[in-house]
Amino acid sequence: MAPGIPAALERPHFIGIGGAGMSGIAKILAQRGAKVAGSDAKDSPTAEALRTLGATVHIGHAAGHLADDATSVVVSSAIRADNPELVRAAELGIPVVHRSDALASLMDGLRAIAVAGTHGKTTTTSMLAVALSELALDPSYAIGGDLEGPGTNATHGGGDIFVAEADESDRSFQKYDPQVAIVLNVELDHHANYASMDEIHESFETFVGKVVPGGTLVVAADQAGAVELTERVRGRSSLDVVTYGESETADVRVHKITPRGLTSEVTVVLNGKYLTFTVSVPGRHYALNAVAALAAGVALGIPAHNLASAIGKYTGVKRRLQLKGEAAGVQVIDSYAHHPTEMTADLEAMRGAASDARLLVVFQPHLFSRTKELGTEMGQALALADASLVLDIYPAREDPLPGVTSELIIAAAEAAGAEVTAVHDKAAVPAAVAGMAKPGDVVLTMGAGDVTDLGPQILDHLSS
Image 1: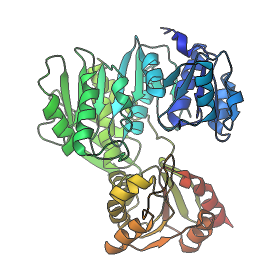
Image 2 (image 1 turned 180 degrees about the vertical axis):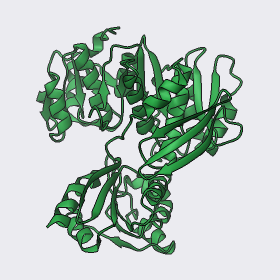
Image 3 (image 1 turned 120 degrees about the vertical axis):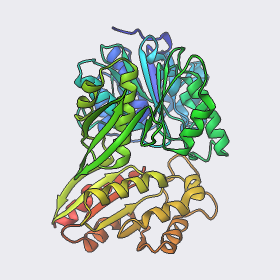
Image 4 (image 1 turned 60 degrees about the horizontal axis):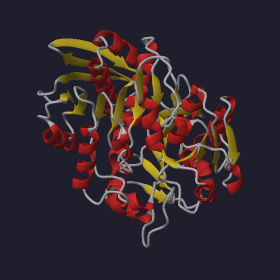
């Protein structure tokens, strides 16, 4: 199967082409034969990978980077109105396409699985991409992170299945019409766009309402927000609802999760039969992600036994408890966790996988709005570590908020009995960690910003 390219995307220009979501769409379009161009703030391996596919990638943002014959300018919600390339597009009358609309058009004509939830989207989407590829189904996929195996976040496959990470942060997941929707959890986050849990639920309900007639919703049976969503949508005649989890009432019931070092063995009850398979990453939350992936594949008619075995081939996504290396007897692992629920899950997973190790965390808060609303819970999560260094807030797309600093997290962590230290100079972290760490310790760099860059630097200091 070779889906076509919409006319508006024949010569697209991506502003922020190196971003996780944007680059994936650009890669698929380039593989389909579009003449792709774009710009990003800095050069990167992602930019180079796009050039290898034939894309033109400019570094920095300037009006002159936008070709006069571009058929569209693709943007994410992070692109500001005064971006010079966006201003130039308006002058030239070039249509502006949101990233979600571009992705939706790529899924047209294919059997789509859209993976949504406050946490776990990237991992679950990746598990499906790996498993379906392992089964020679040649899926297309667009993921918010790079797979450890293929080393890419997106590809155009020859099969009829498209697996996509569905982003709720700006409501863009409401643009998709999947055959199968997965909802892993529903929690309050993205405070700049959602004022309440009720708004979150309304947004997820709209997403589920876009499932094609006769399609399937795979939804968690154990998480309160997901359970409420199920109650809201169950009974719609055109929607098949399949619940999964440890609840006795789950349609795909988790009978047992057995940790085995950095892997887990999972046994589920599906259609009255027991099925046991391996998940090659640590932690209960990743095991549950695997069960969601299993349920979604079965909903597309893939034999459960084959799919379960193939899911075991998934070995991880970059930044999701990714081992960066070991030096002087100290392991350094990178975590993308930036919401308290994710932080707690990853810290508990590492406790289970390395129960005798001392756990040291370098945490970089992400976004002022998130820190304002959830700083207390972030600090409480850090109490699961033996010691933590907390960096200044990574602003990403946001401007500072008065009175919102990392001190909110540090105060909450100290109140919870945690050993925590503020570090305002990121460059000082590698030496500080090397001075703290002892053989047998595990160091976890944690956050959605550029804290990931510190892993190799910490290893260098430990080695010297």
